[in-house]
Image 1 (tube, rainbow, N blue to C red):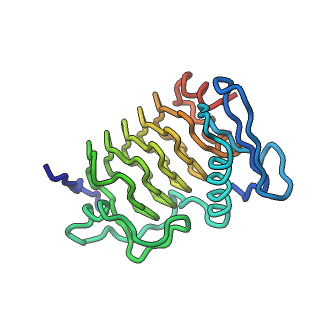
Image 2: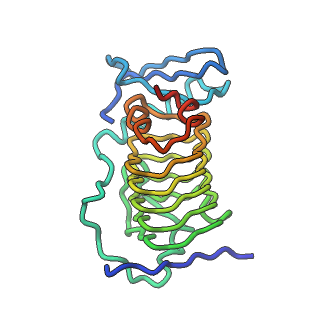
Length: 236
């Protein structure tokens, strides 16, 4: 059966870490350190939460690359003026194609306006797509399979991702302010430079999540994260 999306009713209208450290939790029983050159201290460290056996250079390289890519271009603030809602009739279906250019830097050939679109339980057409700089506020992705997606500089303020699967995804400089992420799965997911202010994060799964030390500190300030998830992340 072909998957479809629908549009909801709309209203009126980390600094570059020159030195990175990947730490595997006690379940794996070892620490893996890597360097991208230069100095650094604990603020430049990265945490690999959950503990896979095959960490090594791959995790270090991924985290280093995305730290460098995100350093010069921060997350889109909720107060930033957004363009008018697109009047393109099939704009919601554009998510099934994604952006063909600009992943790490959020550059796009045409705005990807997914605001107020409904992708609830979409299991096929979002996997592995590049959603660079996508406007996703007030959209629904509940129960969707978004594994291996690349979300760079996406704006997801107020969006709903309840039970969404972000396995193996790259979540880079995404604004999740006031988003509903209850039960979302960040398994082996790169989380770099993203913000989760006032987001609902009960029962979120953080398994083998790749996240920088400073980003981890900010994430841990979200009091809605359950005790088990905080333990998995290593929140203090």
